[in-house]
Length: 448
Image (cartoon, rainbow, N blue to C red):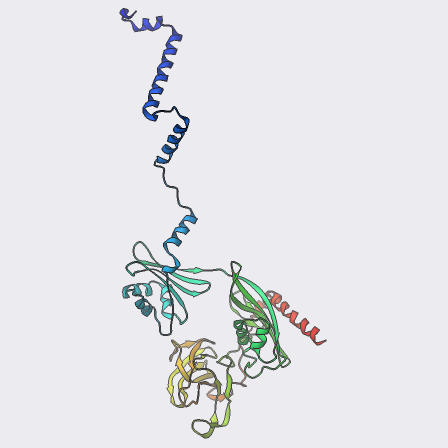
């Protein structure tokens, strides 16, 4: 058959079933050869399994993408709290002086201060503010946090291009209303403490009713008050107290009520239940909780000059450094030293009214001639400059250039709720005013 030289004849004469068996056998031999050359001995199952496992972990698999938790853990590990330098702003501090004390270059100071409108506000940092700095090995600034308040932080970061970016981080707090009431036996602060009312809340109460009630002179034993205010929480932890939502004060038998309202155009203020503003155009007193050491008089014995003369203002005795606030919106027309007044600020309010603040220890930052101020804005601090025997504020109130008694002069009122918003006002404030009615019922039950 081989000598015939005809392959086709050979295949045709070869049994077909034998040909298939030969091809299958050849395939098995090839597979066995591949197995021997690549996997080595497979006689023991345990050894084979171990080799397969080792082969699996030696493969160059791509690394899995890090999870959010892993990234957070790495960032915490990379920047531990101890790496941050915490700075509390002191009196007289500026961003430049703080950076210089921490070895940060003046070039970086200029970059941060001129970065944008957010960072330009760092020119007005106040004593007590907190700044956190994160520096690299070369003492260059990596990150900075300016904690403006509990809900806002200014974050400044250096990017890969070695330039800086900034963003405001806002933290949302949950507000819950709380009702408290108290009765005055000896002092307002003691009554507040007995009623578990925080000091900052009672100070806000004084500010709300301060136009109608002189809390230095008018408080009587038996006066009562009730407050609905917010407590602010973050993750079920109380952070601080919020604003007063409604309040009632019964002073010497006369009842005063106030409620907080924000109109549809976004303006907020405190109003009486009928919509009249609780705020007057002027504060009754520019110093909080001071005793009156000398009243308005046409004939008063001057303790320094030792003679009788008129006293065209009111003296509020207070500790040196007590903040003095502008009693109304206006413009500073004089800020300087003037005779017996010592350090003096005079503010013009519109065309008719002027107020004067004498014997100051120092002026507030930015309080200078020509500067516009808002009601309640700090303009200076109590001192004893000029003809003064001790620290106090000399306060004058003038109408058309004529001195008037600040304690008794009729103060013009601010604008009431817009007539177009009265329905919205009544609907929006009903809940908080109804909570005050709890106090009315309690009073009625106690007097029966």
